[in-house]
Length: 325
Length: 101
Ligand code: SF4
Ligand code: SF4
Image (cartoon, rainbow over all chains, first blue to last red; front, side, top):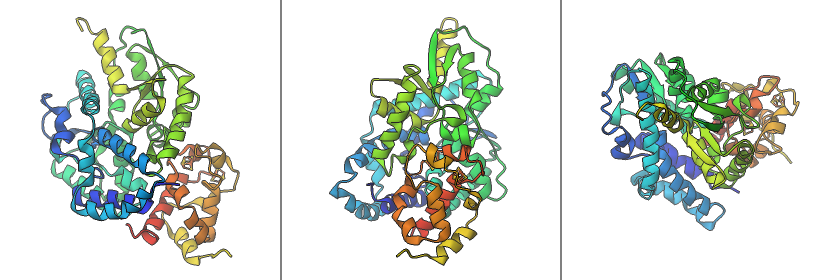
């Protein structure tokens, strides 16, 4: 059994069309992470968050509420929810109850990413409230026309801002902008790279070993869609860590179950539980590179594992290795 | 009785990116899929290509369950674009069944 598919997809699609995102966020939630960093507004090279990290705290609240509804008589009211959502942004109310601790954590990951790039000598700007969600979820669910319209809107905005290169922070935004946009948007020729690729290209100097060991959980999208699995390992090793691979890693990585969260929460837990067992066999500290993987594995792991975001891990190692740091 | 719909079969033929015809039914994909549903993805494609509309309709939860993780695709000897094929099915269902575009 599942949650009712059509009304939920309808809500996502209505939100993207009317409000520019599947999960519309306040300006403060979307851009608050950059406060005090002094990132220039705009420019040819942009750090493009795609708002995924910022959505995670609200998504967590929503998925807990949805999981409680799965298989309950309440599911029949989702149709009414969709009608209501057309007028009032339902997800806004859900995001109000997201914990501030989790919001702080998401923001810190983005701040760490910006810090790592700066340290590597990369110059970039940020679009602040001009930045839009890139549309991956709507494309995944097969709502191609809504997606295509949105992609054109994003592309137009980037063009107007004179953007030539995007540095992305999560696998889904990387893939959708790099592989999918060129198929839907005529003459889309903006260069797209993940910050992990950018950092690896900058060849970070190896620091002193920090006496730590991490198990790497590859994202399906980075590993199989983007063939990107060496770079995170190189970066972790250069930061002084010993890297361990679980059973099923690199291009054979096992999914975290995250893509199922919004429609089939119970199934998502089964998949993430299986992955937690594989990771646990290799160590306690797990490094992820996608906010969806992180939230889903953390939920399934409870106290069994400590799930980190790779940006936080890399930044912590550099701080530890830095003199006076 | 199963209702075969030539319309569904024709749509599958037209759908851009749908290439399940290359499949020779080795079963690798189903064996590797973390979901472990018998129907995903091999049988589902066959039903869609034959235009067995009612069967495809009954499989809507499985179609929307697919993680698009490409574990199957990475190991498919016939290079079938499995995840994109499933996305194509979602697109057709969204339009035909759910009235979504
Ligand atoms: S692995 Fe490829 S060829 Fe084998 S059954 Fe699956 S789709 Fe067909
Ligand atoms: S892409 Fe879908 S069918 Fe293929 S292995 Fe992943 S969940 Fe299974």
